[in-house]
Each structure stands twice: as structure tokens, then as C-alpha cells.
View 1 (tube, rainbow, N blue to C red):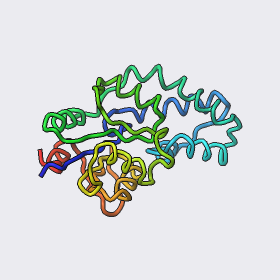
View 2 (view 1 turned 45 degrees about the vertical axis):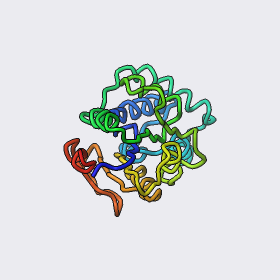
View 3 (view 1 turned 90 degrees about the horizontal axis):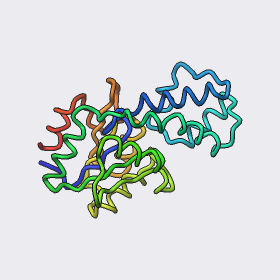
View 4 (view 1 turned 180 degrees about the vertical axis):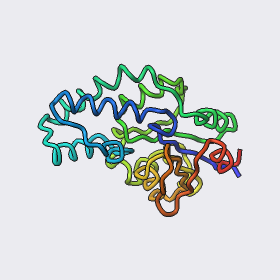
Length: 210
């Protein structure tokens, strides 16, 4: 049965942007003389900019103020955003749900600047579209607030909504919001307890009753 609402993570779920985020982070780190750790990808997947900054400051000696640091990272990222591609199958499912009248929102731990750039790059922009960025909430994922904000904007009970996310951080937030949560990682990994783990757009369609 198709749910009343589906709320999508953006980076890694709707758009294949995680490699760009990592490349921008690596470039920004090297520009200040810090060698990126080998497990950088796992450490930052799905995590908002401020906790990443705190980790880099505490463990790797990053000295730039946050505002200067994030501008440096985004100066590397934004030119690359034009090359973004959708995650195979994801936007097709989004558009199919939209045609059926299912309420949807994009729920991201990224700043508004990145949300708008990424969605614009893949053409996923239309009047009345609901989006929740890290700037729109007090607490980002893994807290429930971003997904609860999406439910408020869409006018649905969280229990009637499905959250789709590619990171453990995001799936944890969906579960905390009381939503049926689909964990769709880019590489096979164990999801948080209670999440439905899938590995393809075909499985996603089946889980959404399409």
C-alpha cells in the first residue's frame, strides 16, 4: 500500500553527491595543511557540517573559525555541483509518487545553500515543493526534528509517513520520528534496528507499493 507521505534524504539518496562532498572536504583539509584520515567517508557520512567541524577541530587540529571553514569547503563544492547526477532510479520513484498525489519532502542535513544547488542541478525543483535543510531546524539528524518538520509541512501524521535515507544517521532520525524507515545505503551495510534495509530502486518501489 502506498503511504500518505514519503520524505527523502538528499545527499546519497536522491542525488549522487557524497563523492563530491568528500572531494570538497579533502580539498579544504589539504588547503589548510591537514592530511585527511583514511576513514573520512565513514566518519562524515550523513553528518551535518557543525559536528564534522568539531571532529576536525578536536582530532586533527583545524584552527579556522567555523564560518571561514565552511566557506572554504563550499567554495570547493559548489562548482562541482553542476556535474551532479541523480541516484539511479530515485528521482523516477519520486516523480511517480508525485503523479499519484503522495505528499513528499526532501529532508537534508546539508545547509540550504547546498540543498538548493543540488536539487537545481538535477532538475528536482517545482512550485510548492517541501524541503527541510539543516538551517530550518534546531537539531539535525540523527534527531527526529528534521523529519517531524517535514511531516508538519506536509500536513501528515508521522506515523503515516515513510522516511528514505542512505545513512545510519538519517535512518536513525526517521525511526526517532516514528516513521516507517527505509535504509538504502550506497554500499551494503547493516542498518539501525527497526529500519527496512534495501539495496535497489526496484526494492524501494516494492516497499512503497508501486
